[in-house]
Length: 453
Image (cartoon, rainbow, N blue to C red):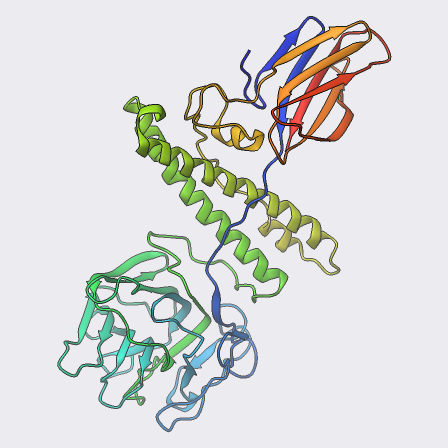
């Protein structure tokens, strides 16, 4: 009799056998934080940076400072409200990768400066240059012309200055979340740029040229030229990573990012892993359902077989993520001073992934991976080869795979609150099959359960 893990039971006289499974170990990856500034201290220096964390002035202006407590989005913020507040720039080497990345932060306009057509918000310039000739991207806003724009510059003076404008004017006195991401891995003619406001995509430029080499400066609230012009507002929580964080609308962060290398930073990475794995699972789920509608069969379709392998990999990644979450909760619970909010961040909420059974043998692909059977072979599945009982003995046989450990449980009354008792654990696999003999103390009916990990 075929049996899927978790769901079906096998009965033979007084012997009942079910199968449960643990998760395999796995790994996942996420974006690397290159730069993070909370602006909660007296200076504009970053809290974390791969390159230099030190803020500097620009264009002969002194370095900007921070606001008073409570004047940032959370705590303090970078002060760019008046001309006397200074300017803010950072060495981009190590802190921003022009090949691919994301910069996000919160900003607020305190006023639209009279007579000024454009107010700068954020940009990268290599090198900063009085004439504006550089490899650069920057965003700016115009209260006069009623638009918000992403501008791309190329170091060739003959190359066009490309400005992508959208009808959006931030309200004075309101905080907005802004994300800029870029992917230049395709090179010239195949690079993509996106700008989001409060998680909604505002600007998108595709099939454009790549940014120039690393280096230059990050300019916050100013351009790489004409430093007399500035934001007339405040900025908070500037973070830069080495990956494209979003390609669709999203919910902006609701609290400060954790600093890498701290418990809060690990929680942020964990949340990101959940999001990415859930998105992957949803895409595979949609593809699986579409294939099922067409009556696909893994046995005669190589593309479907590849898809099944992808679905299995996604399932294993989610399983690994859940395992990591449990380990993080346990390790952090032992730390002194652990905050309950951190524990909340580590609760697994990833959406379930549709789990296919590519060979239609009644056992899902994920469970076949755990058991070490072939998810593309309908004759290979984790099932009971033989289950016999003789006087005083129960003999159980199941297919085994290298590297697996098995546990046998036994119960005499399934109505008990906690009926299962471990008979033996850490049973080493003996491929191609394991045979286990149990000698119960009585001849009462017994139920057996086998676990594999």
